[in-house]
Structure formats: C-alpha cells, structure tokens
Amino acid sequence: MTDPQKPAVAPESLLAAPDQASQSQIDGEIADLHAEFARRAAAGERLPMTVLNFPPYRSSVLRSPTKDPKHTDPETIELWSPAFGQRDVTAIEADLTLNAGPGEPQGERITVTGRLLDSWGRPVRNQLIEIWQANAGGRYIHKRDQHPAPIDPNFTGAGRTITNDSGEYKFTTIKPGPYPWKNHVNAWRPAHIHFSVFGTSFTQRIVTQMYFPGDPLFALDPIYNTIRDQKDRDRLVGVYDHDQTVPEFSMGYRFDIVVDGPEQTWFENASWFDDEEEQ
Amino acid sequence: MSTAADRGAGRAPEKTLAPTPGQTVGPFFAFGTDFPKKHEIVFPHSPGAIVLSGRVLDGAGQPVPDAMVEIWQADSDGAVPRARGALSRDDHTFTGFGRAFTNDEGRFEFWTREPGSVRGEAPFFAVIVYARGLPDKLHTRFYPPEDEERLAADPLLSSLSAEERATLVLQRTPEGWLRQDVRLQGERETVFLSF
Image (cartoon, rainbow over all chains, first blue to last red; front, side):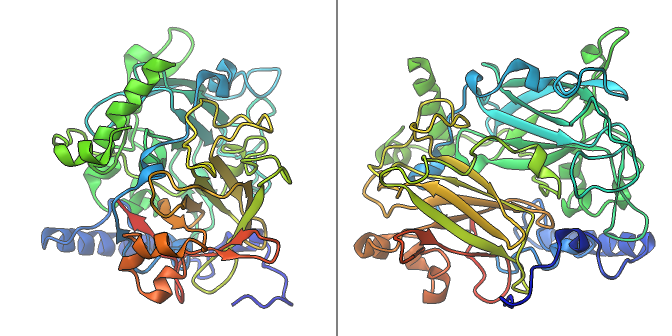
C-alpha cells in the first residue's frame, strides 16, 4: 500500500521502464507471446483481441488485471449511451489544421474519414468521436512530452466531431510523425492517431489508435502488438483512398470503426433509431 | 427501449462485421478528451449533489496518476438521460455522463447524484477505466451500499465472493458521499466485466 508519509512518485519518472531492454529482446518477447496466444486460441481458449497483461509493453505489467473479467449481461444503463448532438461540438473542431493557431501547421495535410458501424453493419449516428495525435515532428502538446522535436504553434492535435446520419465522420489534419518513448532502448511508436468513440450502448465504448499503411515500425511496437492476431491488427491500419485526396491540397485515408457489443445491443440499437426519429 | 420480453422473444441475427480492437489511451489523452466541467454531472453543492471519488491503484498499490475514469448513470428517479448534449454543462441539466482524470495521487472525483433504479434492479454507476499502460478499456460497476434487498437480488453481485463483491459496492463517507478505489491488479483486484 501507499505510504501516506511518502509523496507520490512524479509521473514523469514513471514513463521510463526500469530495465531498458534492447529492441531485439522486445521483438523476441512479442514473437513468443504471439506464438503462445496462437496456440491457446487454436486449442479453443477464448482470448480477448487485445491482451491486457503484455510484458513487452512494460507499463502493462502492474497496470492490467490478472484475473479474467467476469462475464455478465449488460443491464439498463449499460444498454444506453450518453446522447450527443451536433451542438456538442462546432464544425471547426473537426479541422485540426484550423482549430489551433492563426497560421497553417507544418506537415502533410490529410483527410481521415470513415463510417462508425455496429456489429451488424448499421450506421451509428450522432455519436461522439474524439481524436488526438502528435504533430508532423512526432511531438505532443503535453507537458510530459519533453523530447526535442519542435512544437508547432499552429497545431494542437486535438479534434472532435459527431457522426452524421450515415454514421460518417471526417477530420482534416496533419499526418503525425513517429514518436519516441521510453519503453525500451530506442523505442519508437509507429505514426498513429488516437480515437475515442461512443456506440449506442455504453458497452460499445472504444478507445483505440489508427495507424498508417506500410509503417516499418509495426513489428517493433509493443502497443500495436498487444493485439495478438494479425488480422485484428490490420483493422487498425487506415486505408489510403485516392478518392479522398483533394487535388493540390491533401492526401486521404479511410478508417471505418466497428463498435462491438453483446447480442442485446442489436435490440437496443433498433429502438435507439426509433428514439432518434422523435427528436 | 425494448422490454425484457422483446429481448427474450428473439435472437439477434449473426454479426456481420468484426469489431475494431481497443488500444491503450496512452499518456497524452488529457488534451484530446478534455471538456469543461467534465467531472461535474451536477452543479457542485446543489441539492442532492454528492461527490463520488476514489483512487486508481496499480498492482503494487501505487497510485496511477495518468488514468481516465468515466461514469454513466441514471438520475436519482431512475430516468435515463436522453436529451442530446452530454458534453454540455449548463449547471442544471443532468446528462448522466462524466469523465475524470486522476491526479498525482491517483485520485478521481465526480460531482453527481445518487443513481436511481431504472427497472427495479439495484442501482449502479456504469464505470469505464482507461490508463497509460492499460492496453484496453476496463468496464466495472459501482453500487451504492444501502439498498440491501436489491443488492442481494443483483445477478452480478450474487455471483461473487464476499471479497469480490466488496470491490463493487461503494462506501458511504461521513459526509454522505460515496467512494471506492479501482485496483487494477493484485490483492482486492476490482472485479472487471465482459459482456
């Protein structure tokens, strides 16, 4: 237990893993764990898509449950979701190239668009999507990010939007750079955009990350590889979409998001759509 | 909202799409998920307002200073907030949704009201925890402690050992407020849920 006389450890010092392993050691640990999970899945064990206790991601060792979650039926409030509407956000919040400073941010301008769907392919309408990311140089606007890449005065890297009646969303932003971190020696995160998404049931809530196709850092990254199966990891990679590029202006990527939920959400979502019509 | 009878009457069709996997919220969520008064579901000190608080602790019992906790709940009369605008804070509308970042001591707190029973079940706060170092979200529930009859009838609580149950039932503080810690791992690990 925490000693009340002892001040809490400064969060900055928690960000570096104590052992500072080499990349090749981390690679070996990832390969061994993926092989073990593949064996267990093949033997019929039900495993989550994202592994919670994944030692190559060093800070997961003490921060993830060691017991299996208790499977339970969602009840009442869990089958609804907070209600969002267009008045929760303003249009400019979806354009990260405009919502920060007086000038244009540095970097490769991109559109990121996609559909928010449930497990049955139905559009999830009027729900909140929040994103945050590093700038083109891989630097976050955050006091705990102190690595020596430049801050861009015209870019915060935070945006929000509400899905439309077809479940679509669209952000204009800058392609983020890779980001160095202190999980192990010379650790770099592949370029990514954090997504926080609400479904029509609270059980469908998801926080995830979108990556960019062909990133050479995928195999090296313990966080991306907390997802144990390649086909699941592939679904976090945005797809280059030439139809979304804007001539002489920006590149375009598609990233569709599917919120999961137990069978009960099929019925609850159906009635959600009825409720919407009343407004 | 469909009724329990509706839900029992049929089965949902086969799912056609594979879900998007979750990832850690990372260390820098604070600038992406902030909004004004995010932890004030009701106006502080307004009639019926209480503080729901606790700490997020790791497997060594140390505070987790970079966690995010969300709660979603019915109002005291059991009404589920349906009006749009869950991020807006006009200081009188009950939106039922709140978000808090832990501080250096791992502490989170919300200003809210007691949740009511929606359909006669034991009332609870639906809770989700995210943190740097936690590869995916964790669902749990916090139940106010007083309604012993409904707590005893609750399907989840009644399936747990006394020790597990104690991680989900809130403690009433001398001020009449509510508190419970989230232990991510180890002794008295919080019971987390899958659906």
